[in-house]
Amino acid sequence: MRRSRFSEEQIIGILKERESGVPVAELCRKHGVSDASIYKWKAKYGGMDVSDAKRLKALEDENAKLKRMLAEAMLDNVALKGLSGMRVARGLDRLIVERGKPKMIVSDNGTEFTSNAILTWAEKAVVEWHYIAPGKPMQNGFIESFNGRLRDELLNETLFSSLAQARAALANWRADYNTSRPHTQIDWRTPSEFAATFPSRRALALRQMTGSTPTPDTVVRQDKTNTGNELRTG
Image (cartoon, rainbow, N blue to C red; front, side):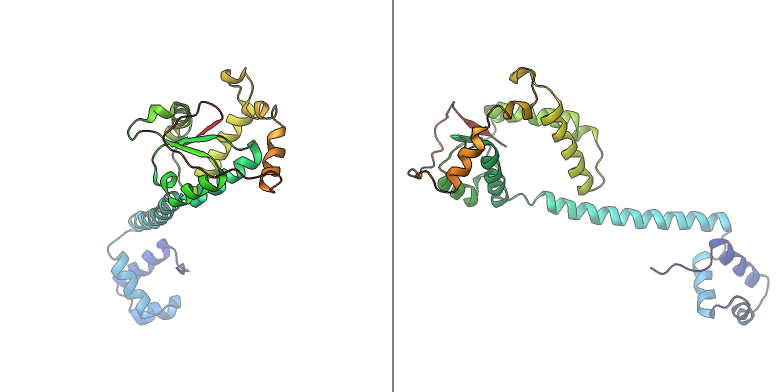
């Protein structure tokens, strides 16, 4: 919106001149404005002093800011709900390249995990997918513990104003969790240090992706829990 070349103080001053009896035509010539501007200012600022006009301007600016925040929040809400099975599948492909292929993935029954895209991915990747019982989150205790730590340390402690800020904060927290913070369950090493002790997995994954090893029969089973190499998500 085009900003007026007159400040609130100047507008109030012009209106005071009008109230003292100066004709509108003379005000227009003196200040180089149209009579429409005079009447518009009178409708908006009539009867106000300078402090009233400044408060009105501040309220208008705040209202515009809130409208922008609401629009951004609505867009962010749409984006946050956009986690699809296909996006999860792409993420899993990247993890396999980096860490190797798990024997089983354990997850809850979220729509992103029960979608046809994930069922197809699991079949093609030859990875068993086990769903925990509905309403039983502790059947996936590892991810529940991680989610609780993420909520306590970041989500419950931060007021996010935009999706971009949330992504940046999550990236910083993830970097600290993976590269700076030692974990008792892996002998007081960081996850990155622990992962570095398995250098052969990336090479194995690349060989599997390029087809250097035969592909076994594809079977997706959802009724058996494997205590071996599992990837838990949710």
